[in-house]
Length: 291
Length: 278
Image (cartoon, rainbow over all chains, first blue to last red; front, top):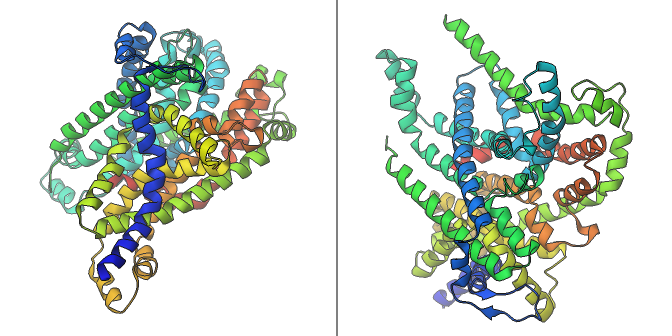
């Protein structure tokens, strides 16, 4: 009786969310794998033609897709480095008990709350008008011009705005990490005469490894999946030079109506994201030290 | 010398912080200018502060309607996520059997799936439900809420699960001996203890759901249902050339976020920190 009762409670507590989760995430994932083996234009009345692995093979000859893979990789590398450096520097400054610490923390975190789509529009205006103005006034016209119309600089603009968005969030994670380092370890090292750099290198960084693991995971996966900022800042342009992975998939499916082929790209996208993030977490986890 | 470094650091921090805020300054000053004034000098203060463009942008974006939609969708989604994911996580953490482990593993593993992998089959499946079971999932705010709950469940269950593990089980056993049902134990004893992690779960989900563009853009087609990011997107499609009007529109979308930040600032920063450390 007691046992049967427990089963009832178990169902009552877990079933509602699990059913929603199955409907929204798990079942579509399985259907998605199925669709990736078909040639289909998304119209229900039109036939789905089974093509086996053809969609996946086709990917290797798709220059626009390969170009977007390369651009996404380049963007991710630059973005991860830049976000983490800016975030860590701010975290170190903010935790060193300065008068402006609180104000700075609040301001740096602010962009994260605003959201990618809106940030992209804000910066579109700044690159368009403010950068040109600064260029004219200072004469540095080869640095301050509208980056968004240049095929190489548009990617840097994306890195720049993404850093502006994410750095505050990553800063908070590093702050939490820094604050969890016990004070007595720091004090002992100061009594022993360790310099600022020695303390940073031998105490702070090793003890920050868990924070590195999380920050790298978050920046890596969100940089790789960037969409909103991409859409509102460059729209993939100029001449598709900033069409990131996520946008390429969206355009393939909903723009050109290649549902099966686009879904095959989406499955590959999943495999790449999973492989990269799991590898990163495995590597950085191994470097974490216990106190 | 030490003092010099300290002042230098203070200054550095202040300059950097101001740099981070400078775009907000640019939006504000230009939202009050007419087109000609804007092009004369984008950095200068406006000659006069009239809210003319705000009123115009508000009408063109159908701002109040979008705000109501965003509030409705975000608040309802987050409340349901908190209730359901805390209950699920608690039961999974406290029932130590194979099934619980499998369910928990499925929740965690799916965190690796990018939204783009799911969007097309999700829309197909949702229209199938709409057409065959006659449950309106597509183009309704409730359908969107349902999907937000599904996508938020992994991270929320994960956070609650970690927290529940740190609560000693003796409290619950004592209450059970006293005759409380599982329901009573959870809502009267456990849920209040979960408060810190509930704050984290709420904040993370509020930020994600409030700012989400792609999912609403796929599910909502009616103009009247648009959320703030959606109406911003359509607004920019039409008015990018009129940057002064666009700036007023952007400012409108930022105001609710700033109010939220000012009201809950302490909780937000603490919540993000705690969420990440878990």
